Length: 105
View 1 (cartoon, rainbow, N blue to C red):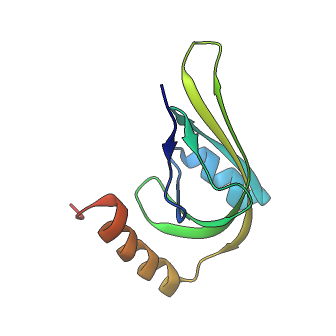
View 2 (view 1 turned 45 degrees about the vertical axis):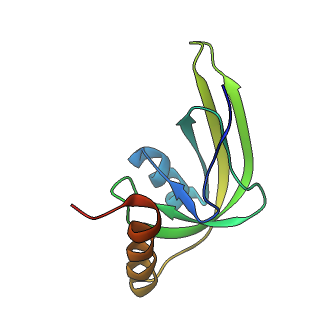
């Protein structure tokens, strides 16, 4: 049991619904499996489930816990700072593949 550290510039959504809520309402949360540490108070780049940079978000809270099913999970609450332009998204996506996600398939 331990905490995995997320990169300061990566906040990748696994659920389209969680991403939709953030973009639609300006605030949202995502749930990740395992205990993770997110940089509370910092701004990070948010990525879609298919690894596309989409927005800048501010991490409001990061809560690691064991849920009722006995699973280790981390809930991350965030607010939308702004969506990225097409050019910004392209550059950030390319950098993320090189630094975090690996080669594109």
